Amino acid sequence: MNATINLEKHFPVLLNELVSIISPLYGGTFIDCTFGAGGYTKKILENNSNNVIALDRDSAVRSIAAKFQTKYKKRFKFYNRKFSDIDKIQEDNIKAIIFDLGYSLNQISDLDRGLSFKSKGKLDMRMGLNDFSCDQVISKMSQQSLFKIFKYFGDEKYAKPISKKIVQLREYEKIKTENLVQIIENIKKKKSGKNKSTKIFQALRIFVNKEITELIQGLINAYNILPIGGVIAVVTFHSIEDKIVKFFFKEYSEIKNSSRYLPKSDLVKKYFDLTKKKPITPSFSELKINPPSRSAKLRFALKLENGCDFKKFVNNFNYLKDIENLKFDA
Image (tube, rainbow, N blue to C red):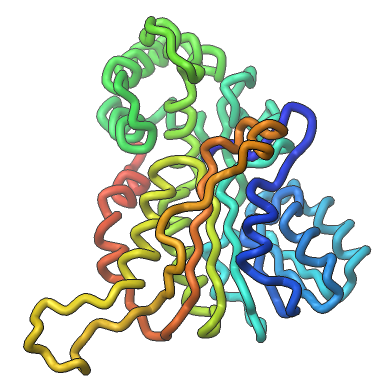
């Protein structure tokens, strides 16, 4: 996941576009699955007819949530939970469920977390409610496991030599954030537009926080609790996330029939109405004030039917979930 950030201020990406999709002007309950700095929630709560249920796995946002609770009283609730647990939320009249898969400025700028390659010291990368840290991954994962993480979650061309060098170096010293950055710098000699460490750090963040499993289960559980007519809207920041969200909406918004001789009753149902097949991207004006939003894509769909089992969706991305379930085998 990339950060939804500006050098000085956090901006909720594609805010106006998202608000126009979920139609908060008509009132109802909205679930913000990634509360963060509260940008989307604040906009929705401007209408006194709206309620927001906010979730975030990061306990550091409790202080922000407390201010919302004071201001909006009964119209705002906060849960320090992963969004894969959204099915445990019991609410009526849910109009829309929102996911913003980016990191906030507060999270990225907290150098103790080691989310950024600008950090110093111990590698961490935990977003909250984690089983392990990045430090444990770098210290204990086998070379082959590190290679898979870097290749599949970072699409890193130099995954093999980087993973090999990590295993060699950790025999002699503890690998900290600056050591990892230096390994990457030494191996990736060629200059590119992005920082050379971007892909490796992305891969490690995904693995440490099990972001693939979280997203897949979060989307399924969001569908399960959403009433017919409700909207799911997702803002993604890298190709893996977008690939998952695109498949989720597209696969279950098309009626497929393997044979024209089958009766209509045997047709596969449409579970979503996908009114816009292509993702919505930031406007030129938004890019000017918040350059990191350039990678953002907003996809959304309207729920049409209950009862989807999502077996094909889960099976299609099992290869990524298998990598997230790699064990410490070094």
